[in-house]
Length: 416
Image (cartoon, rainbow, N blue to C red; front, side):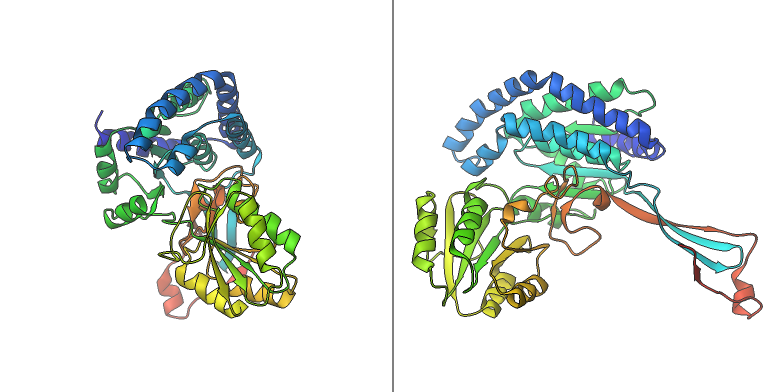
């Protein structure tokens, strides 16, 4: 089947799933979680096959080591993946929520109501657990989704989606073609041209992927290119706390987009040498003179710069950061508030690891990605970022001419 037909079927499915009840959507999600759990070994087997083939891709430079690390599905990722689906089922339905209700005049009532976006096109690299996360969020928010993963995870991706759609086929009242997947490189180009059927593109991958997508489509794009996260150790920072937070932010999952890449240290921080020693002890390579301050390492490497003040730290982050997540370590509440207010990022943190920037950890159940855009969704994008809104106006034969001539007057009375 060619891509346009897949997109057309997804568009038709999006109109049908928009009318599906919350109860049916939750049944579908729990069916997916049960099916993933029951078929875990099948998924692991497919993932082992991908990992074996991906080793060759790392050797010949086709993919990076950090991409390879994101590809692996272990027991922890599988547990989180399944729990994420169950958590989404427990969340309130974001669709058909009344956001505003205003009486324009007696009997003339305006409502602003949340509704699905429509069809989502997701292009991602590695990380096969993305499929269950995005599929579940799309289902709960009544959107259809077309997924395009990387060549390095084709077996895992195919297996997971087959399990998901097999589970959905058994749920009474749930439409077909809500979740679909394409595999060919040519499908990416076709997806980007398909503005007739696709309403939003969400890329999850490196800077080159996101840049290419933004430059080659008329469809709105939601996402982030880089994860250049910073931690600033202010002069009043606690050494033990700083060591703990920085090491977690760098080593807990070095290839994640919310791992710290640059450490800024106040020139008057009295424990600089001890802090750097603690970081080195955690097997982190400290780089004092990087070729670029705007670089995402994705491994146990950390750029370090000494700054004169919180203002210089903020300026550095706003100049070289990617608008993702940045943290200040300090016992000075005034400096903390200044940092949180003036750093121009989707996430501003005080005394905590940047690794918390995640939809699952925020209680969103999962995320379709992290957005550094300044549009309707920013930061980890969960259910609320996958709905938009429409206006409904109810009346009884009112016409604008009466108001233009002063025969009638608006009262604009909010009802909720």
